[in-house]
Length: 301
Image 1 (cartoon, rainbow, N blue to C red):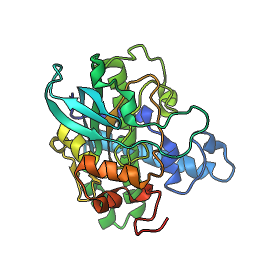
Image 2 (image 1 turned 60 degrees about the vertical axis):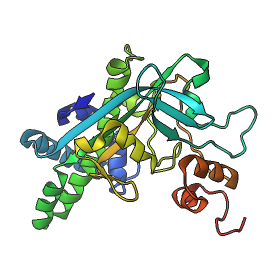
Image 3 (image 1 turned 90 degrees about the vertical axis):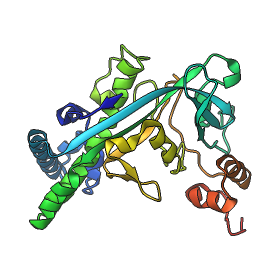
């Protein structure tokens, strides 16, 4: 499913202004911060300026948002792996997705989660589905920013970048609702408004490679191949950062009990298992998972 372009006006109701204001070192939740006696006036000025810029960008078409979604048959085929199939016959593997499992101590009977838990097992024979997406709101941003910088208008250059980032996140929110209510349709009667969406009071999650539930950024390479993200104008750097930077990508899981979580620290045993599954050396694996290592790769504890 290709969305080219996404009308910027459609994204306006989905903008979460709290992170936007935090980028300007204003602390507090939107819209309550507007009543803050110390920060309220500045917060309103910033948002008003951003909305004015959004009006201009919507009118002149200088900034473009695009997205792609693909839903595909998939099953858990290992404790921490998912196989994406080429079609519903589930006979030919299209891609293998590699995940990690929490290893830290859990109280009571709380499970140690892996994203692979949110799909049925292949041997069950029931067949499951998942999705992937990529969206950008940064096409055309560089010339906009460059024009402001050449005019020595740093304020509006920074404002444009911050606004594009918020539009990308708003687009991910808008797109996920399209998936839940229409494209996948597992929550077709979802009644929530934009405020409830920002608070994530809905079924399903969209974890992104490189974030707490799946911290290996290199899995974005598989995601980009699956949805052909480069056709949108998206690219990956050698460190798997997305360009344009005002972009979001991730997986879709529809399991009603799916929730976001952090893998946390992992031990050598899981690192070695992940290295085997990825076809990496231990050193390569430790480099990509460095923030999540629960030990000193140099040999210490």
